[in-house]
Image (tube, rainbow, N blue to C red; front, side):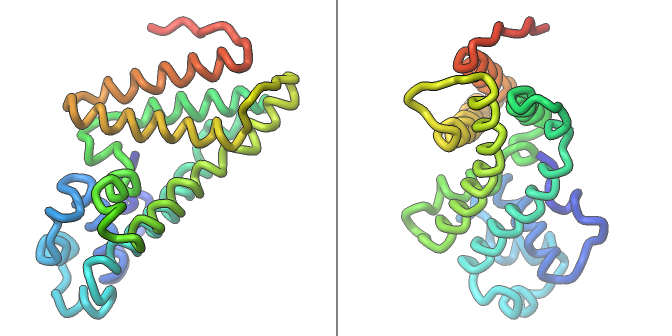
Length: 211
């Protein structure tokens, strides 16, 4: 997934530079291992500027999760998976798109909110809640297409559009964990392949041949 700094046309002021640095460094090292000094050095700002903007490292963590949600929302809003006229095709195109952007190092393709919440969910409720807003906010963007696909195809069952949307994120975030553990992004792409098969089974579609 592109870094927020790649989504911004200009480098911006101290606050934006610190948030961009946080998105990079936390995905690379984790929250605890990323010091205020590290953030200031990468953002090319003083510690005085850091504490003027955020007051604490925890406040920076909350702001970074919100910044991640804002910038990645713009990225996903303009992504090509919205183009197919059929809602089920859009859902499958979303899965294919998520698979396609898994490349490079783990710090480049993993989710800041997922990385953060795994580390601090118990230690920092404010950061946990910000990560929750980010992850579940993105999840909600899938629900309309899933429900429209259910209605169009007359699919019933003991599941909802909301639960399937959440499951997509379970697979994606879990795939990132496996890819980190195995140091291999192919493990995350494999998880997305299985998600594609699962959705096709729910909607009684044949599996697409894969190269």
